[in-house]
Length: 322
Length: 84
Image 1 (cartoon, chains in turn blue, yellow):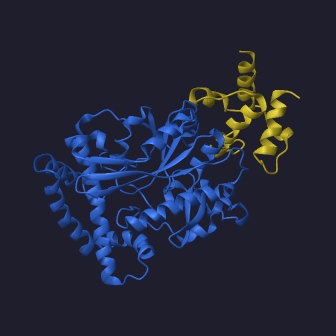
Image 2 (cartoon, one colour):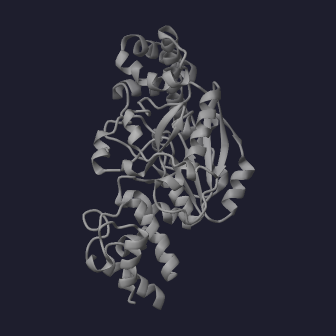
Image 3 (cartoon, each protein chain N blue to C red):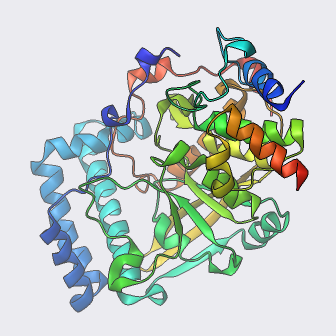
């Protein structure tokens, strides 16, 4: 890919800056503290209604995904889908704050795949957990204590992102080691160190962080989307297995955390993005399954299918066999 | 062949440094960014290549950051690890 086609981090089409002012977030934290989750949900329903009906700029952000997920939907249905998706995101953020403010016991997390996760970790090569902006990954991550290994998280936080992570409520110590993708060599050496120590590395598999060069386009909901492949490269280099871990809200105070797939990336793959297409595709397929089961809990509010995706490294049919 | 010469050959052949021969790589040129232009994924690859060709493991950031500055620093790191 020519450098002219590469976007810089500053030109990327999404950001993690929060919707709403800091006082509005504090208002919701107060509602949770004094009224509980249901009161916060009730206020949220009104706020989301305002955004969906009167802020078309915000509504449009949900429609990139919704038009792919519900291709048959007309204007009114899209409006309804947008409301449900935005409401689900709001509930996810409230649930995250609830865990922080009222404690982890306020939310029940059911884990599917516990034994398999332990067995993957027992291989002694570290474990890469690929998650996505779906459900409430922070709520889910709080349920991984049983693995009894330090968890390092590749996480970028932008200026203007005022959402508190769950551990920031009440001044708790961060339970994860944060690796900054904008740090030295994109955090690559730190990530290698984590895996060589047999520990857990968690990365988001559905959004680009850092240089767009490390992406490969595979089909997702009918058209190519660039997904990052650095995690698959790390797996190939270290022998670490990959577990795709996705969470979903299943009740007012319940989440399910599921080991949705195990991806094995062989050692010694040849250089270049094309070699990683089959493994990234496995992730994309798993994510598609997730959107079929939980259509309103997939939270990417930007155009993942941007036409520039076509300029990404194309899937090479000769590399498509697993 | 010295460690430095081997490293240069590995960089050119296995990291596909286009339009560059081993002889053109300067011993003190930065490996990443402005120097040879390697990136974070190349760093992962380089760690694997060093282990494969020299039997030397770069375990973490503390070891890797000073070692992966240039051919000079990487060769010195490999030499020191082999002696230890």
